[in-house]
Image (cartoon, rainbow, N blue to C red; front, side, top):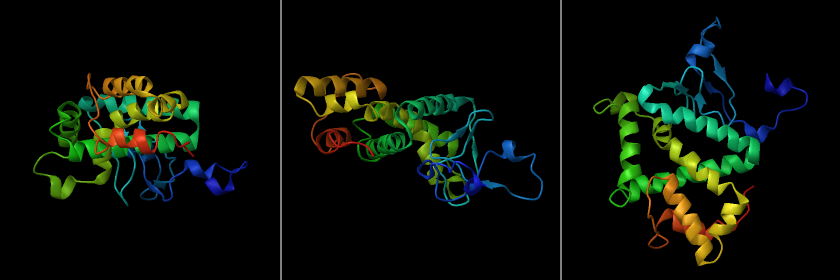
Length: 210
């Protein structure tokens, strides 16, 4: 049990409730269903290729087929961010990446056809059309945008990139170019603060991450 560990765990790194984990990892345990308290940075079992987070209440892990290899790669990048920036900064940066992707996917489909198509394709693999009533979960929607959320987090977590985002017009253009590269949108230019990236640059980039 984590509570009995010495030294005491860094509780900021852990989710607030137990959840199902990779079923293949837990298959050796007898006695019924296994739930675990997982850290915020563990989204995928890279050994068996199961999506394990972020969880809905009681949501089982989702298998990731060969068409979702980029999600597994994103988990390794996520762990590198953790080693470089620590628990709190990585958590905030990845969450911000998810929020930006969510706004682009929902509010700007006509303007962001490249990423929008990627997210929609992955969502249809995870939740096949016609199975929404039984297969839909918020966790699988998060999974569809995970690679791009982590790609954005690599900029959002970096003090140097944050400084460029909050800098003068030339510095901001360097940041904008990097954003476009990571989202597969070369030539991206924000139009106004309704664009979630422009909004983050104006209102949040200069704020330190916790």
